Amino acid sequence: MKKYLEYYLRYRPLFLSLIRAKEAWLWQKYLPLKRPVLDLGCGDGFFAKITFGHLDIGLDVKESRINEVKDGTYKKLVVYDGHKFPLKSGSVNTVVSNCVLEHIENLDEVLKEVWRVLKPGGGFLTTVMAKPWEENLAGSLLLGNTYKAWMKKKQVHFNLLDSEEWNGEFKKAGFKIEEEIGYLSPAACKLIDICHYLSLPSLVLYTLTGKWVLGLEHKLYPVDWLVKEITENAESEKSGAIFFELVKRD
Image (cartoon, rainbow, N blue to C red; front, side, top):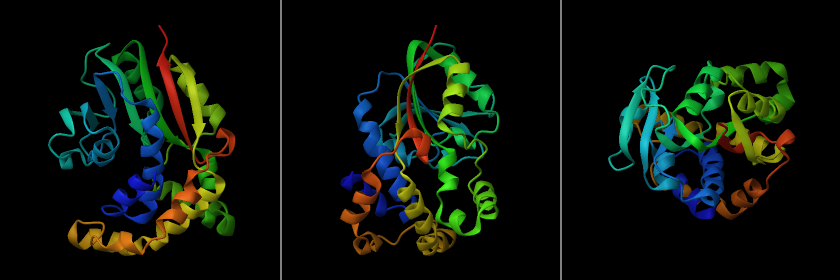
């Protein structure tokens, strides 16, 4: 995990580096992925490039950062309208999605589309933020529901579901749950929330220059300590984020 955190810190703000480094490390267990692979909510492709090297299809809405994807990350980029994937039914073996589903307002519709484009027995691997995320934010412990509501709006979280609710959504959409891993402990949630504010200079820099970091900030962080703080997993019911390995049922 240390190598992912060190790399991320060279290009992204501290708070984002912590969670993405943990996720990149978790995904390694499932490689290589069975191709062709669709990346749902690909964004600028930065996470996919670091975690997977390259994938077959990157899919996102027009309002995303899909236009910032670097050459070589995906064989093909596809823009969709937020509802129907412009892909043939049963055309991919694997769908991956990293912390995207919590931002999708029409969750049921999109999950049905994932099921449709997967081949029979195909795999859907996804990470999602969960309800304990907002409950364990450092600010929530101080300001309660006011802070939770502000962060939910700021982070555009439509679906902060608990473990049981996420299970229900996936089963309803036609998926069998093979594995479920809670990977953000309550302590890690607090740390990442605090790092939001430590990362404010990065936000200012990005606003002014389009770059999150100058390139030297990573040398200032206690990387070994940070890795230790985010390594521990948690029970799904208590975790701020959950990794799901799903399989399409016939």
